[in-house]
Length: 406
Image 1 (cartoon, rainbow, N blue to C red):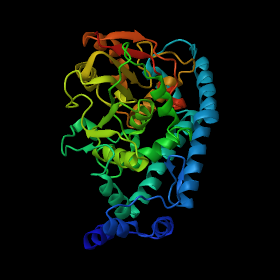
Image 2: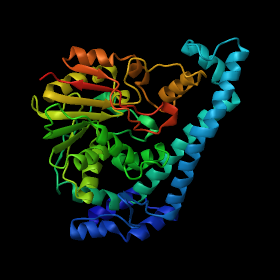
Image 3: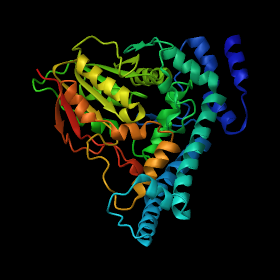
Image 4: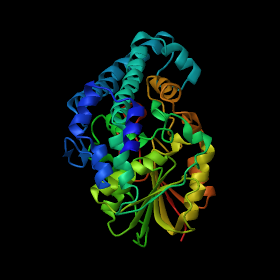
């Protein structure tokens, strides 16, 4: 207990909402120390989603989510109308392409457009602050829960400390510490992205939809599946539920992400596996998988890492295997004109203020070309499945399939 007590003391427990949360949990750190396990569900679950541990945080989360919906709908439409007005006043046709710099110079400082952008950014920053306060003010309980699950099954967790290249340490989405630098990155990401999805993914609905859309090899054999860049494991679990007899793996370079993924799968009793690894260097044998998927991975890695990931995917797919990458948009026509000029502003905001460092690299990447150069047959316009509700980024679209020749 001394180690647990010191660790908790070092994080500086406070009162208020965090103190209430700890009292609701009933000192789960002690439970973990005495029993070797601690499943923290102080307020139970809503389906597969563990409820937030206190009413203060849950009410804040609902306020934050509803505000995000308003920003992404009504406020965004007001900003778009204002953008059209400004462009027309300057003799420009909103339906014609224009230089990025021109759109930003005309639109970025307008009060309506600026309010939309700043409201969106500040809301996201505040959301991370509130979530992080909960996990760190109750550090001992949450860390003990994760530690207790590390070596439990079903499924295995494989870790490789210290393998993270520099480019993976960026704070994407303004998430404190990013995916690799905060011990609770998985916890933060899971509850944070519930907010991103405008409250429409509490039961992993988007991931289930995508898993159900995954095409199978022509011979119908599905023995092994990999989800690359698996984040907090929602897609991995959804794939296992669709293909219950398959060996399903998730890989992610965020060590805290795969630890959280494994803990969540153990808690749900789902037999899936997680490996701490790069999508471009998975460590699996040649021809091991029948299907490789990814969801919203490529816009969060460098252009070169995207190409390396495509080549690695071809290597680990067996002949006839299927590659199913889904992202904000992966087709060559993705830089479509939106009729308002706001796309340029959203791209700029996403890159500069949402810390999507490789956003423009992703847009210029020759995704289809690299798949073909790697030896895959490319099928454009995959299943017409909308799998994301991120209004400001046009959603994640399933629009390409790669087949490794048999």
